[in-house]
Image (tube, rainbow, N blue to C red; front, side):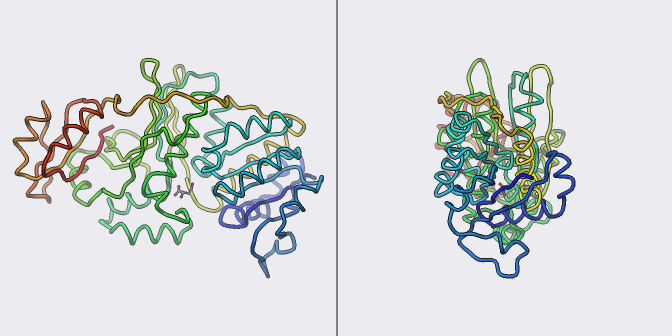
Length: 401
Ligand code: HSE
């Protein structure tokens, strides 16, 4: 029997209890041991809850109990989660977490600390919800040279974009539904401004590069400027609009960014709808491999946390190592990335736009009038930004995949 503690009894933490209650036999079979929640740490009490007797309010009860071998940190946020995780690892307990904010900020040093204490630090649920992408990167495809990762990494924004595209729904009402379904962050700005996808991209980029990619070094745009007109043009162009996190190795340089893109319909990422996430990884021998599944929500995310618990129970007394060193990675400036852009401006700006952007291709949408829209040739982000700023009637832009 392995005893564990869950820190934080919110959406994911209560999901961990639910997965263990529902799939206890399968979990025991997989772990080769039974797993029992001994404590749940939360500020609140949960009268009437099946696990109310396990609820404690003092972290020291958990950290001082030698019977507890594994901690699931599902609180979210940096503090006190960071302090609790560090203390747990130093007390010789393995830690797993869904806390992408903390993993993006301190993951490599927590892996280092786990190694020092001969325990493990796993964080599968921090990227792609229930999708087993990190374990696969660290195991099945670790021998590959990874050239690129592109992913839809935020369920809330993908849900919003899907509803706006398919139903013409308005932004705020769809966001409200995503919040009610438990997909959105406490502060949904983290979702819609791209910060959550940025943290997940930083985690993927760190594992891809084997070094620490800081989320602050990743250029990020969210989805708040996307309008109904953009979807009309996207249809004309045979594309879908998706918020993508991407990491790419090109000519020895490492690029990473988060932004909404127009994705061609024949790219599998274009067909990923609703709360689903997908991550396309390209390896030099393997080619493309695509991971797809629920990127948010209680049970799916909790299932990934439980998978980490099982892994740690199977590796008791050993450190599960990561190709992730606590040394800073160099991320190339986004200014130097080259691509095509879709641009909308006032109809009166047509001549100016034509002079500024050589070889542009005009785009028309049946339901939109009074403006001039076009796709640029391949240009650098810097050149694009400089020229776009010179359009007096600029209405918006999107990157083309
Ligand atoms: N708010 C996040 C999302 C939750 O929508 O993807 C899962 O990380």
